[in-house]
Amino acid sequence: MTDMIGKIEDDTTRAFAVACYDMNTIEELTNVEPDEIDMKQWGITADQWREAVEAARTDLISKQDG
Image 1 (spheres, rainbow, N blue to C red):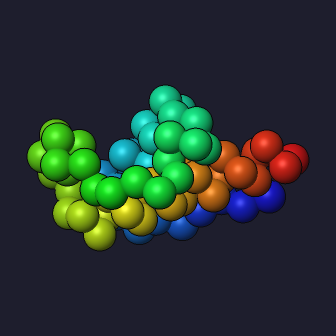
Image 2 (tube, one colour; image 1 turned 90 degrees about the vertical axis):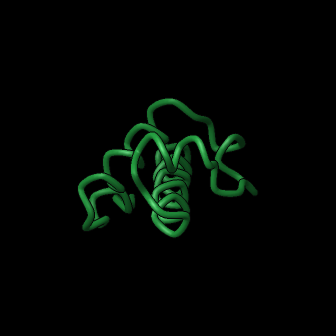
C-alpha cells in the first residue's frame, strides 16, 4: 500500500490531493491536464496540481488493489 499523499511536503498541495482522493474516481484522475479553476481556488501551480492528482490517483489504485 502506498501513501503518496502523505509524502507531499507542501500543506496546500497535500490538502488538494486529499480532496482529489475523496471526491474523484481513478478514471476522473487519469489523463487530465491542470485545471485553471482548481489552481486559482487552491493557490497552487500546475506542477503542484499534477503532483496532487498523481498522488491521489496512485493512492486510489493502491486502495483498489488492496
